[in-house]
Image 1: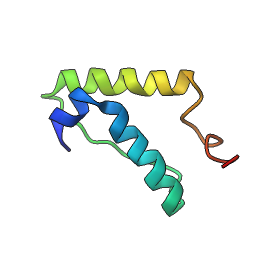
Image 2: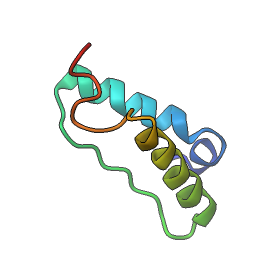
Image 3: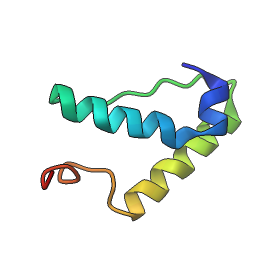
Length: 65
């Protein structure tokens, strides 16, 4: 967990998880962020919402790849 990276570029974390999950065949990912970092939580939630609205998260995202 690197708070500074999540606060500055949460998409990098999510993109890494998507690629890593695809390569390893994982179907779920877990992100742990301490409650003491509300800005990191907010930015990560916002990034996830954006990716979901663009249909870049979910079970079928990389199925066509």
